[in-house]
Amino acid sequence: MQLPLHLDRENRRSLQTQIFEQLRELILAGKLRPGTTVPPTRTLAQQLAVSRNTAMLAYDRLINEGYLQTRAAVGTFVSFDLPEESLVHLPAPDERMATPRESPRHPVAFKGRVHAVHTRDSRGLDVDFWVGRPAPRSFPAKTWRRLMGRHLLTPGDRITDYGNAAGLWRLRESIAEHLGSARGISVTADRVMIVSGTQEALNVIARLFVREKTPVAVECPCYQGAAFVLESYGAKLLPVLVDEEGLNVDELPENGSALIYVTPSHQYPLGTTLSLERRLRLIDWARRTGAYIVEDDYDSDFRYQGSPLTAVKGLHGGECVIYLGTFSKSVGAGLRIGYMVLPEELVEPAWRAKALMDNGHPWLEQAVLADFISSGAYASHLRRIRRVYMGRRDALADALQHYFGNVKLTGLDGGMHLAWHLGDHLPTAKTVQEIALQQRVGAYALEAGAAVSIAPTRYDERALMLGYAACTPDEIWEGIGRIARAISRPGKHALQNRAARPIP
Ligand SMILES: Cc1ncc(COP(=O)(O)O)c(C=O)c1O
Image (tube, rainbow, N blue to C red):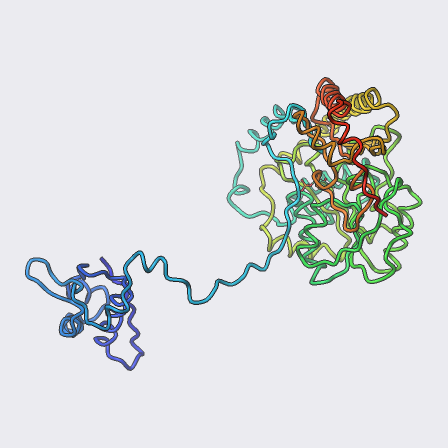
């Protein structure tokens, strides 16, 4: 046994005294229990690089004062009859465990709320209209396996060394190229930074701009994942109401806002598309007030009606836009790969923030994704699943129409979910959510569907979110049919007649 003793040779106290005092302390603190054998003086002297005589003198004193005892054939051990005053200080092991701490531990400073996400746990549902979940079978597993295998044949030092925290250059190049044709954004690879999904991008942005009470404008209702990150850094969230055409730009706060978070392609949660006129007015506002626009373009790869509008980032004046893209919807959320397109002046600070967070993204996934995009496989993958998802969207709209008549839906033009605005003859969204759950069907009122309203809106009570990408048409018909039958069942009339609370 080595004793945890540390001698200070600069100390005025002799080495022998230091050994005596430290050993006594270990005994009194109960760290050396009665009966514990201590090392022979020769061993202790070697451990501490002192003469054997010094160790012997220290032990002698401990023996004289009753802390140690010595017995032939056993050696020297901690005394069973410790000096009186020390017994008072020596708690039994159980007592020591129960002794309350002298002062409370420092409080946790972090106060973040967690946003709702879909995990692999399907919660025992037969049909789950969870929002924005890709079809699990759409993942290009065969191509992925092949590309991974190829990269692992000759990984070199790319797997053992750190990479650039901003991401793999080849991937940044292929994303820059993709954005030109797909989103009308003309950008070079040095402005693209790879992140672990939109969630990390939002953390980077918040680190750059948000301190206690920094004003940040957000859509209302808004994506929880964004609102909760900003809030956790201390932002004062300023709600800007969303109407049938997306963000109501007439309501933008006139000054002080550092950022505005928006989802122009497919507003989360309502699915509306921000008109070109409103996009331009948004840019005007940002240029006038000095705010940055955070454009979250999470599911714009899926557009079913007309051609997609150019991203706000791609419009004239788009230099004030921080554009966020993710592969969570188009390839899979488990990949955890997304990217930011940064205004020039933010490239370096964002890189520093990202480096401090995680030293960059895993190399292998980036290398595979870069090949996947540059080989054209990504474009054909998108074309294929776009067709599938469009069929599912149609099935959902048809099923709702079939069972509920003239339904009001928003978000049909693109994305992976729509919002059903429940007529006043129907129960509230929360009640429909409960009824659906009893039928083992997942349908989501805004709050349960990862949306949050900073100020109350009528959508909180009347909008139901339905994701369709991960459900087959048969499942969609079955799920909506079950909800319709449960709502119209006579016993459920009490639920139907529950009046909606009026909300401004
Ligand atoms: C509005 C919005 N933005 C972004 C994301 C994607 O986040 P991430 O890239 O972190 O997976 C989602 C996912 O549901 C979303 O709904």
